[in-house]
Image 1: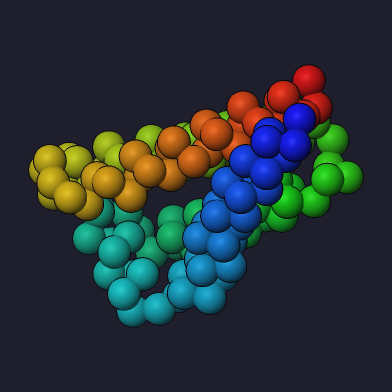
Image 2: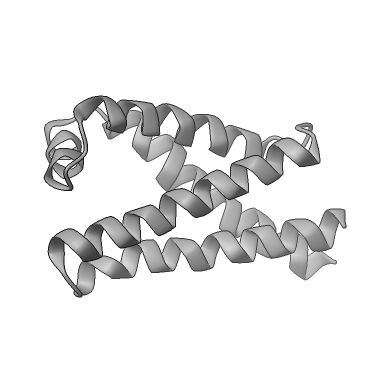
Length: 120
């Protein structure tokens, strides 16, 4: 039980920091806008994505949210990370840029599994 709690909080905190805090601080930067438009998405999509990411990380971090809301947050991040993987692969081809979405998929799976072990 203690191991699952440690895994949950470490993995969920990583998601919170990279997908919540970092996104909130940098989503409107020139680099972020170039990144999203470079993949063929409109600028407003990046803004919308940032809002959903910040809200999703809050849902994952705050224990009081209902389980079904957390399930939607996990699903949303799963779709986001898979879409990032596919978008990068299609636009840039197979290369080192694919490591990040794959790593975040693995971190999300660990968070999700440990969450269910703790709250099953």
